[in-house]
Every structure is written in structure tokens, then in C-alpha cells.
Image 1 (tube, rainbow, N blue to C red):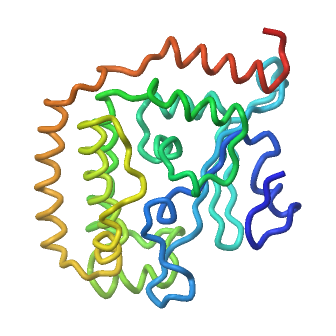
Image 2: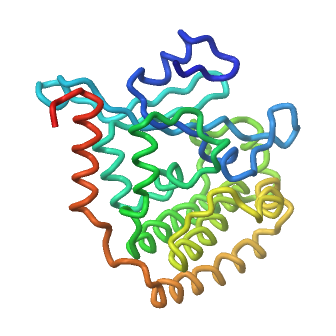
Length: 258
């Protein structure tokens, strides 16, 4: 039974599907950049990401289910149905890939099937990560300077944007994504927990000027291109083995005879 801190079992079940096989902290907690709510500079939620196997009506019947998203108190949760989760992994989605490279302490729940995914994370590694990481980084760069006070922004974050004339949190994401992408292309390891966390916190709280952020980003974009050219990673993920793994897990969870 999964239970989130500060929530009852019933409240947790409203957020997390019972059939969840893998669940962990992502975002600032996993990166080591989380700023607690009692800190005046705090603009962070507790982000969690998971994967579940749906019931048989989704696979054999008419019902559709791809993901469950829920925000409750400080918890911000997304749990993907396993087929969608694997599709996102194959696209090298940075946020989803991160779930496979957490520190052990940042996993909230790992079932036998969840462990099987972690043991086979190498199947999802490829040079195509360059395009996804760079694409996400460009998105953060755009939002950093062309900010819109959207619904996800709390009052503290809006005040930081107004104070520094750019979105410091987007700036921190930008630099982190580029550095992670370069590392991943170099050795196939996604360093979710950041040794540079103190520096990323400084960026998130406005201690870097916009000019310094842009200069570092420009440098990292160039290094990302160089890392892509030199990368020894496979050109594409091993989709045949990924599909076999997917079928194995769904059969196991639905207790379908092998």
C-alpha cells in the first residue's frame, strides 16, 4: 500500500492508482534543488512521477486510459499507463527518463515489475536524447524571457519574475537540462541528482543576472552539439527488446499465462 507523507491512505489513493508499479520523486527533490515551503524563497511543489498497468478493460475492451494527473496540497503527481510511459521513454523525454535514474532514496514505490524496468533502462538509451533535451531547453529559454503569468505560477514565483525581469525557475531548468543532456550523450548516464545543485539554486533564486544565464546557455548549446557529434550511444533505442519487456510486464501484472 502506497502512502504519501502528510496524506491518509484514502487521500493517497485519490492521487496514485492502486496498480502503480513504479513511483518516485522527480523535479527539484530529485535534483537536490528543493527549497522547503517554510523558506521565503520557496517556489517548489513535491513532484512525483509514476507508471501503472491499467486493468484488462483498457487492453482488451473499449476503455481508454493514458495517465492520471492530480495536484493536492503541495503534491503534484503524474502516473502514466505503461504503454504511454514506454512511448515517452522511446522519445527520450527528459522528465520521464529521469524516473529511471533516481537515487534509491527518491523512489517511493518499486514493485517487482518496476524493478524490471529499472534493470532494463539501458534499452531506452540513444543519441536521439540530443533532440529532446535541446528541444526542452529551447522551450525553457523562450519562457524565461517571454514569461506569461500562467496558472502554474504561484504568487512567490510571479514576484520573482517581476523583481528580476525574467523567470529564474525556467533559467535554472534551462541550465540543468543542457548539462544533463551533455552528460547523457557522453556516457549514457542520466545524473538526476545534481552535484551542481547549489549553483542551480542560486539561479532559481535570482542570484545570476540574465546576461550570465544567457552566456552559460549559449556555451552549453555549443557543447551539446559537440557531445552529439562525438557520442557513442546507439542511434536509436532497442524498440524490439522494449516491446518484449512491455508485453512481459503487462502479462505479469494481469496474470495472463505466458
